[in-house]
Length: 206
Image (cartoon, rainbow, N blue to C red; front, top):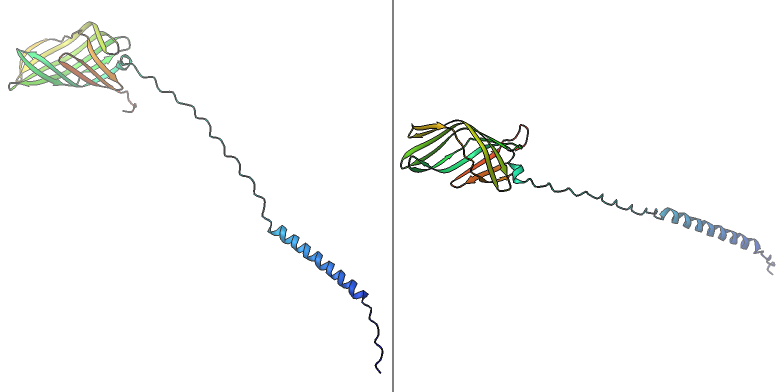
């Protein structure tokens, strides 16, 4: 005959199990929350707005200089061509070197130490100016008019190196056409043309 089995009380194990389950659940929830906080991306700050470009003030265009205003200043002749009647022969003369000064007061002064040369029928012709002239002038956008001309010096004519004539230097007051832009001047009339460059003051760029 087997001995009677003692009846077992399950209340304590059930309570302990419930407590352990609750603790485990709390631990899991806490770990999940910690993991979420650790893996959550940092908030990204919105990009700052780009600064608007500052308005740029428009640079006014320079006022064009009138031809009459351009004319004022000192000039050096770089080219001279003319058709002249010399001792009954028409000769094409060339040269350079006359200095011209157009004043704002309407006075023109020239300094001539130049030789104009040309050939015709095998003969060499020279016209040598040595002196200065002074005139009053008025200019519009196309023409220069002169008055009150005076001159000092001489003009000498040579043919094949021999002096043919010598006279006092003189000048005309015939109106002339011209163009002037920047540092370039051209003065011309019937049968002749003069080109000149402005004489720049020291330090001024070319």
